[in-house]
Length: 111
Length: 113
Image 1: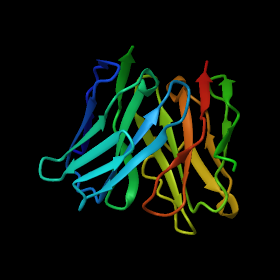
Image 2: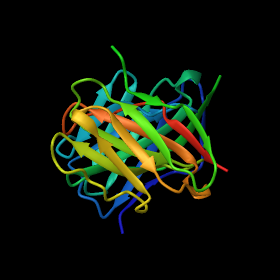
Image 3: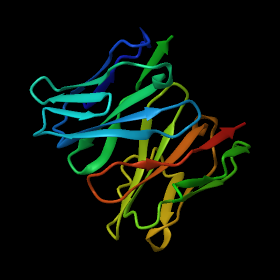
Image 4: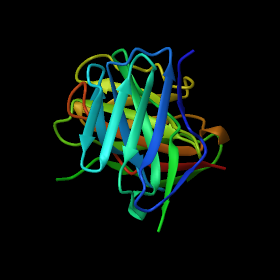
């Protein structure tokens, strides 16, 4: 069966450090993968999209990698700030059908 | 410009009643999605509309759930004979094209007593 796995345990890091979140998947052949941020009581907000032929994508302090051999995406936030505290969701293309979302990983950045 | 809006923001209903949830997507967006999110869970896909194509209903959990999109714009998700397990936040998202970011609304929190 298809699975998208994100670390269910919250990630706690200190301000200024780099946060790294993982998204692993099985039984998908995604043409692209997306990362979203969700704050409590709000809908998710799009952050980055990376295509299968792209190894890495950057946007300001964010960096996403996509390894289709390992079936894994890594999401990095450099120089993290308390305002980065949120839940981060990865979402996979499902061969032209609707995006499938992972359950998300909660990030807490402490001063 | 205006984002995706959903109404009502909160809905409390009694078991067995029907409810209608509304989504106003961003003007010009061709795709519209409905998801639901239970406490501490990820987004569960319900239904997907893309332009004039037949909707992808593969995520609807039972025949009590239905949705329509009128004129390629506003969408209504209807849940008939609500059950307590239907309690969740229902999120709507619209998308400009077929491979693009999704813009989410704030959601409707449904509580079935």
